[in-house]
Structure formats: structure tokens, C-alpha cells
Amino acid sequence: MNRIFIGLIVCFLLLNCSKRNENVGNKNKPYIISYEDKKNISHLKKHKIPPPPKGFYGESQLVIDKKGDLYYYQQKYTGIDCGTGRENDTLPHFLNLQPKDLLKIPETSLIDFLSENILNKEENRKILIVASQNDTIKNTSFFDFINKNKLRAYLIRKTTQEEDTVLKYKKNNVSYYSGEIKWDKTKIKIPSTK
Image (cartoon, rainbow, N blue to C red):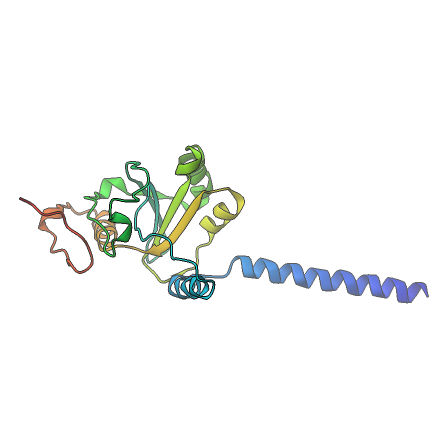
């Protein structure tokens, strides 16, 4: 009788170990932006929930390049854009982002860096925008940050034309003048110069 009881306990413990390993694997699986966007839109339609306002930028942006390197930049806090028409824009606005604005973050320091630069803000400003040059994000350090901390919101999207361009100039350490770039106006909203 004791042997059967001990055998059942051992089997139970082994089954529990395998379940824990499955959970860890799911936590670190790659995030595929296009798939998650389609899934979210489908969920909203199914439950007849209006989609959230469109937008590209927030006060705090984390940019992940093609190699998985991490960059961070901030924009001036402007509050909520509701009623300005900007919330319905389908093209990102030109920010005049400069290579010096992009700070490279070592992956080992990401959680400390984001904690210091986002979690110390007022509650309504604890928002992170994650932009990736790749459709699949394999670096899950920021998901660890998001899961462990209470952000008001976060958004994951592909990088904009301006972010891609400025990142290229920063990585190549080349002088950058936004006025000399031939911007694709189907991908970015350039302010008119009058």
C-alpha cells in the first residue's frame, strides 16, 4: 500500500514539473505583430467593441531594430489627442526625430531603464509604445517588464518610416538632415512648409 501511495506522489510531482515547463515556454514565445493585430481586430468585431483610437506615438517609445537591439526615445507629453482629429490619422506625423534622440539600451539594463523612465511618471502617463522593425519579436525582455509592472497601457506596432530612417543614420554614424530625405508621403504626414 505504501509503495502505491509513494508511486502516485512521484507521478503527481513529475506531471507538475512538466506543466511548469510548458508555462515557461508559452511566456517566452515570439510575438508576431501582424498575427496579434488580426486576432485583436477579430476579437473586437466578434464582441462588437469599437476599436481604440489610432495612433503611432506616445510619450515613451521603445524601438527594436532588425538585430533585436533596443533603443528608446521620448516625446513631449501632450495629453490626450481626443477631439483634435489626430486620433483618426492613418499616417504617422513627422516628428523631426534626430539620431541623438535614440538612446541605445543594453538588454541587461532594459527593465531598470524602463522602470526609471516610465514607472516614476504620473499614473495616466505610464504608457509604452513598442515599435519593431521585424514582424516577429523574439526578445521578450519588455514583456517581462510589462507583466511585472502596472502600466496604464502599451501598444506594439511596426516602426514608422521616420524611425527606420533615423535609426539607420544613427547606426551608421552619418550626418542626418531630415530636409534632405525623400520621404514617401504615402507613409508619413509631412507638415506643409509655407
